[in-house]
Length: 323
Ligand SMILES: Nc1ncnc2c1ncn2[C@@H]1O[C@H](COP(=O)(O)OP(=O)(O)OP(=O)(O)O)[C@@H](O)[C@H]1O
Image 1: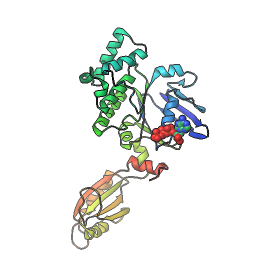
Image 2: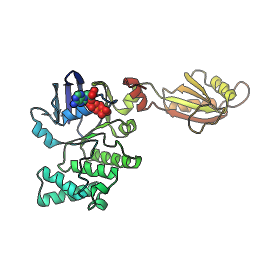
Image 3: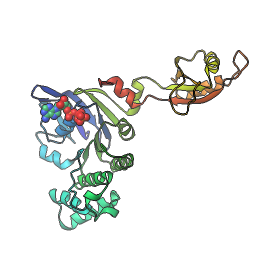
Image 4: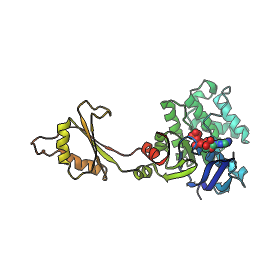
């Protein structure tokens, strides 16, 4: 049984259809990325799945339990941490964890033991006795996520967990999410950072205007928008002519003079050919360019690389986001 099952879910706010009949599942132990532009329905989906809002029509189940008919049981199985940390800045790390624990019925030695476990698991030993208000944003988010785990939930909803964090703090939260997956917990992660989804998500559900526009692993989504390309930078236009001749038969899709990208120098030219065989194509390109051109010269190659489509391209192609 999947950890999360959403079937034909519709959520309307008056005349606004925030979700217009979405369906997807998350397997147990999977990190599912919910991705989409602003207003596409990510937060609404999480609100319905976490019993904060009722669906207009359609169903959603957590480990087989209906979020409307069996909302109490669902709440025992899940935890939710939002964009804004729900920790109390005036309390210490350990006190915050204790509050989360007491709210869910833990007391005495069991509570103390659970706090010890979480402090250890989330590497919070150094800040255990410090007020959370004095911690960095990333550390605070970590305490927040630790608090969400006091009850050992089956499914954790993380709604934009790294919004507003600096790169280092973001990386720390990423480690935390990877740790949840290692512990076999199902994670539903909403994010606007494509790099984050690419790194963390086993599968992605891409939403746009309240509808699912694509589902798949990051790799599947990337290949769905077009294959990999091989980029060859050569010293100048003359070399580009030689390279083009030697690469006859490869599908040349772009020639760019003075490419702006990293480490290229004025006068250089970049050729882009389709690379249906990925690394294999790059190997063939290198072998061809190693030959001698018709004018008796070799090609002066500056750089050769394989570039796969990024999730950014998936996002821009499949959603209606204004550029
Ligand atoms: N309480 C509400 N009342 C009316 N409309 C709402 C309400 N909550 C959300 N909406 C609308 O539903 C749509 C989906 O919103 P939602 O917050 O789920 O999107 P989102 O993908 O989470 O966006 P963001 O990335 O900006 O957080 C939007 O058009 C939004 O304006």
